[in-house]
Length: 351
Ligand code: KG4
Ligand code: ZN
Image (cartoon, rainbow, N blue to C red; front, top):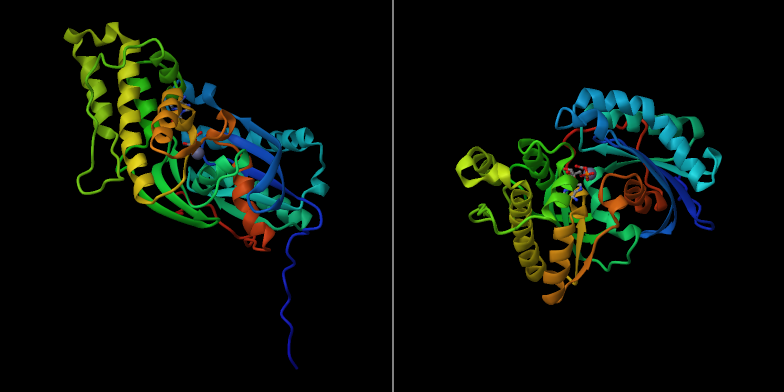
């Protein structure tokens, strides 16, 4: 007797599919409802984010234990908020997507466990998502971008250049050898006593500062054109601050502007070189640091004058959110792929 293998049914394609996305990899608990009918074609019905800046602010950085405890309290209200804003009930959701790594394992587990519980209880397919893939595809939430495109992912945990060749096909061209760009912003803000998260504060201060006032180094990694390093600049800022003779502490706006300009210089050089080498039409800027006004302004100007198109998500989709997680799951869910319910969180999940 020939046994017929049970086929997994693709998600219904006659009507749009509703995906509930959940994200909790670091200090933001987020949920979103995404409506989609084809890969890369999606409408965000809702996107809710509960941040924890007030909790971690006084420590100058994310405290993992506090982050996961806070997620435990906020994840259910955030999911309920996303459903309400989308005007739908849990019963209308077709699939669940959640970040499974990389990130803080205690934080990841809260969102992933919640997603697994919902998938089990409602009998829905589950997709675990790589957080970086979410950032890479975030520009597609609002823009049509032809593939391949080059993506510069700049966040608090990651800084890398990827060639996005298709859904699920990402080639890492280079990235930071030490700190992420956002980490450098946060650490420099801490050194300057500015608060957390530092990126937005430095961005605002730099508007009133003189960019050429302090000469800070632009690090290069020998033999790796698309690699970056941000640990040296952090030390250079620390030394500048210590050197009272040059009046650094009397000119925090100038120091913020000089630091930001150096980071932008270091990010733009390999990005434009990679875009040229790989002959892409478009450069996508994504991740929390993509919110930086000077980076957006200079990338737009310099990439466009070199003949490349530039896309960047609006600010709410640059920083961590669950709409990008639902989108990164959508192309797999649409072709009937799903993850098992014993899926585990992975702090250093590779893309
Ligand atoms: O993507 P994200 O929300 O979380 C991670 O996956 O890391 O990025 C957070 C990072 C923080 O380091 C924060 O300081 C930085 O993004 N950031 C900025 C700006 N807004 C947020 N950095 C520079 N300029 C900004 N305007
Ligand atoms: Zn992120």
